[in-house]
Image (cartoon, rainbow over all chains, first blue to last red; front, side, top):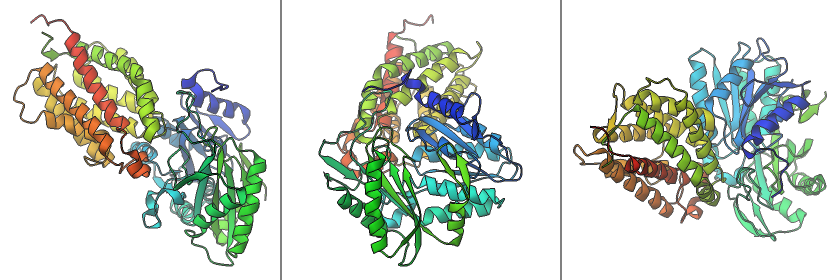
Length: 333
Length: 218
């Protein structure tokens, strides 16, 4: 597999270095650790939002650091959660005296490492609260929703929580906003191909040229069904059916939708998928307030996409639509 | 006959030998992890033990076996990330704590050392034997030493290593119930757990290193 890299062990480090060089107007890199923080961090009196996780999902997570977005992001190696020391360093660098909210996808490795960093910070009397993102309906049944993994829904939770922090709300209120966003959204993905980890140079799983896998996770975790590929409208219909069956929505509700590319799917296909999703939402009596289409949480060079639908109340709507700027996403009022 | 005790200098060399072994096993571990995980386990283990080797090389001359293992734990945890980073890091730190005040590791020290690692792992990882995790190898290594009274180091290490290998192999027949591979359930059947396999490789490398040593002066 051909890759534009220098040293396969340095991919994550050089990628975040490049990101920081490209976007000094939003963020800066911390010396000696794979973490970026808002250019003006720490912001005094504001709750600091810290996100992060394994690399390979670019622009998630570091691409969502900036004003109105997260205050900092910590990167691990490819598909591996960051270790405690850089999490601790980044939290210290962004802490503005009002506590730190950890936001990350619910994976065992992330939980262990972020919890360990939280213990280290507690010893220095820095308040930390944690919300683990659990939007992927394919990863566990509704009665075990807290065990679900986080996929592209990170985007909505980080946006909403960061906007609440920007309003100078306290740590409990910012945490509550993050929880509300997480409780009100559901995601489902489809993978058409595997992806190649630079260090091994091989695909992380096999999938035949004609097959797709509904519900596959961001690191190739198996989904709910593997079957021959269908036309986009049918694939989108199947994914949307599974999301709507799980989403706490009723006819007349307002929603936001994210159509997320996994890295190797052209935007044209994402728009074709959105076109179909749009029809499903309208058939369910839901009205779309805002749509986001693009590569937000990739799986290296995997082909495929995911849908994330979030039900909006007035608070979530206000926070989602609040202005924000970061390398991966700028939104004006 | 290999030496019956290991001092701090032996421990440093042994950790370096494990690091070399891990680098050799990278592709194998990665292939196991590709079958049921995301394919990065071999890389993580190589980088983690590389960090241990560098950290241990830089420790002052007088560092005892307890300090070496504790620092190895910090180094592993700080360099890797992932669940294995915190789990194996805490296990190494616990092993260091179990050896507090000791100058050497002999057969009698191996049991408390391995059992402290199991206790640390259970506390941090919340797994149970049979969940198809690292714990299955660690638990089996401890079980293999039950009833051993004052064993010599090589025979104790050999028994523990054989136990760990059996434990790791047994995970192939288990469905995954915890961690990322748990999403696979029965689809993980037939593949051994990469973390358990790594632990077996560590104990096997320790045994192999000890076997290669010339008899000690005493």
